[in-house]
Length: 487
Image (cartoon, rainbow, N blue to C red; front, side, top):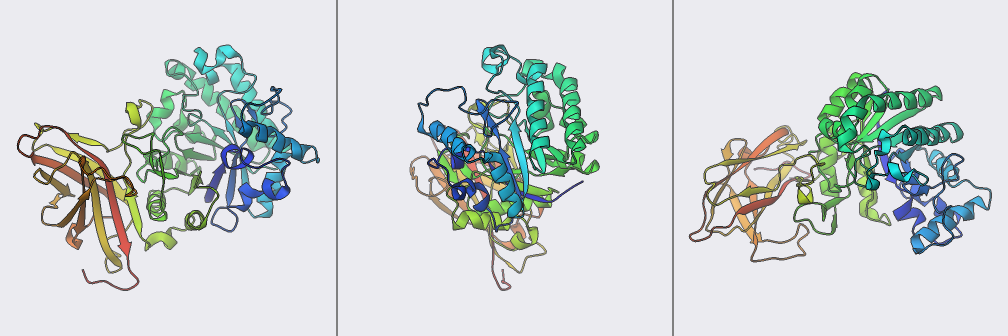
């Protein structure tokens, strides 16, 4: 049955067991739940394992650190001793969080990374050429952990994390096709066990059907057969907010079987994982609103957020407070930051519309850039104060003849200001590498609700300038005012 969930994910490590000093107080143990309580978050999602151990005292799997006499890293030392300090007081670290979530009115989902584990046969490991989940032994181990989580803990659901945790396929590409039937049978087995306990089962999957099948997962079949109650499209190796994530196929397939879709909202607006990416820049509330609005407009049943800047402050809690209601953010400022390709041409990432590279001899070719916006620019015309189109072009000079066309209308007659080529947050200036173009769009040139097409056409480069242009940033900024505006 479809359910609206606003989910916050904590991986147990970076902003929890890694950072608190043992012995862990209950107030510290409750932090992952308490820091999102009172926002729109109604579901707490907790990563119970990493490839080298579980973050609770499992009877069927190895606890993190149990195989070590000493720890080289202080973070790992904290993990073991924080858990142990609770256990020594008769407290199960996982039960502490489950109970706290329920006390705060949240559902609790336990998420299990479905790849390597602490006692896994070395021959099955991906770095040794093994098949990971292609091996029945590996699947059986994870089944036992999922069964323990379902039967022994008061969780509301369990999630199979299959979105390439650790950055690599859970099944090698050369074994994927042959493993598709076995994985569907496995998911059916897990679903039967979980549903038998009256609980839900979900899967964290890749955004496109092709990428899922490429690592041995027939997600469409799982949904068609009613095996999973929800799916979360995402990919760990791409941590940049994408308001145009291609999850529409999942919505269509899931809703036919009354399952839910909760797209992941990555926390960054720029990151080294993308071409020309910075180390890490956090998404603003305006950028998050845009992505959330698109998710709801395209049929998502909720959203998942994670890894916001920590400790969570006013901006982060504001983001989490706005996630749950499309009506609340409908007439609030938004900034749609179009996604860019993963760095190094990663073959396991879906294709985005940026960057666009235009060679000097490629004159008069229309280079398409597709994007989606949830704002109804016709219905809300009087409340919209202005719409800006910001485009960053690498190697651009003012003498270049570069035209942009939006939904068939040339923007050559629109007011356009130019600025120094600088980072997405304005802090890094590179005055000799290109320019920002900012089009102040007249209402008759505004983008429309839904799908839009922006085209770039080079009519000619400056004399004796032969390098390629590269469009690597496109922002669509929609600003609202409290009173009707005359455009």
